[in-house]
Image 1 (cartoon, helix red, strand yellow):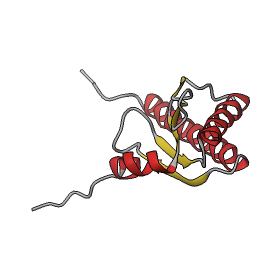
Image 2 (spheres, rainbow, N blue to C red):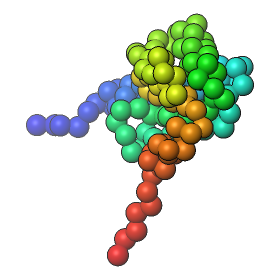
Image 3 (cartoon, one colour):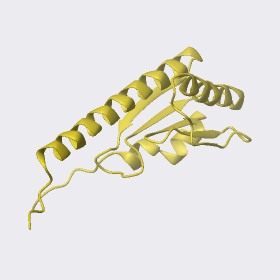
Length: 133
């Protein structure tokens, strides 16, 4: 019994990965433009595809006030919709100290600087170096 995929199946799988990767890059561009349009601070994109099966990337940005954080998150969601990337969910809009916009392959965190420093998502999602002994 042959358990190896046919050449056409593997090519279609590779092609699917390339299409998905291009979608992620296109969505990241839309997110970055939406954040810079509303003057986000300290925008950081993290590729987490190798350490997470939940998302391929995380974007973290800061706003200067709760009103600014909400405006940033709203603009990301609006611009993503216009570009054809439907938000799966938006959380934290009421308090707006930390608003999460889930776009499927990309999760956007817009935070006040104090919340960003306290939760330190950059360190949490940074890949740890593995040493061999």
